[in-house]
Figure (cartoon, helix red, strand yellow):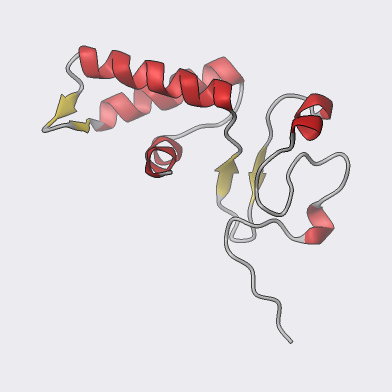
Length: 109
C-alpha cells in the first residue's frame, strides 16, 4: 500500500534526535532546548517550512503593527513591501531564511 503524506509532514527516516522536527512539523519544548537555534526544514515536496514559536509570533505581530502605522496597507491589506520588510526583519532577528510567503501563510493560521 502506498504511503500518503500531507506536504507538511516529514518522513520518519528524517526524524531523529538531531532533527527538532516531529511528524507534525513542530517542535516540542524539550526538542527546542536541545536544538541549535531554530531549524528551517524541507518537507516532502521540497518547499521550505518554518517552525514558528511564540517569540517569533510576537515579533511578527509587532512588526506588522509597525508597518500598519507607517501606512503600508492598502484597503486593509499589507503591501508587498511590508511583507518583504517584515520577512527580512524576522530572518535577521532569528537567523533563519524567511520570505513573504512564510508571513502570509502564518497569518492564515
